[in-house]
Image (cartoon, rainbow, N blue to C red; front, side, top):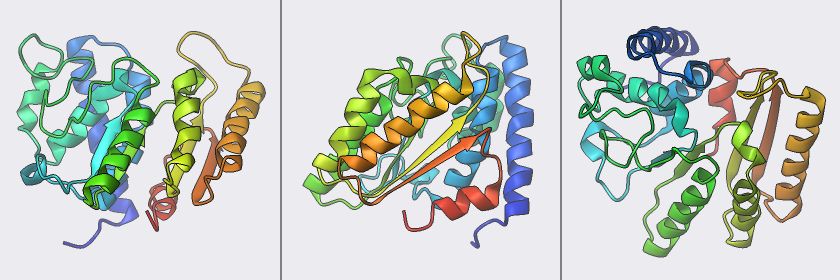
Length: 233
């Protein structure tokens, strides 16, 4: 099957957003904005890059995606359902007791969810651990971590990012979509951008020579740019 065009990916993103708004409204859950903000990234990953399918969720050689911003997991659920990892009708029971679609994810709650990520700041460290496991076991899978900008205020993120090059994990793409509103407050955008750049300098300066560091002021929602940034990974 050929890779979807940018226009087809854009249509898929709109379909995901429609379902996402629908299930969030029905469940009366929070964090809709954070879920909507990563739809295009997830669509690009699951339709063009990730080597994983409904039939390979337990395959040791599958690619891993760690969804570190667990509070926005409704976006991941919706994408997984549209990729046939579980029946799409199950989305109607999002956040219902016993439905397997909790507001904060747990491993295996539905096929395709790799890790419990309700507590922010741990996804990058987990992803690095999985990447190291891939090397030790000589299994050539890739690990992707989707993070929120706000969780980069956690010290564990900085520690994980600076550990990776010391472990010889040199291939990485870091995308930061810097939004004006933060969940708890209106951030000083220029100050925050300075801090994010500082994080990039720390990572690149510590030996992460294979990394590409992409900072955007505003959301990254252009599929041509997203898929182009994945080239070589």
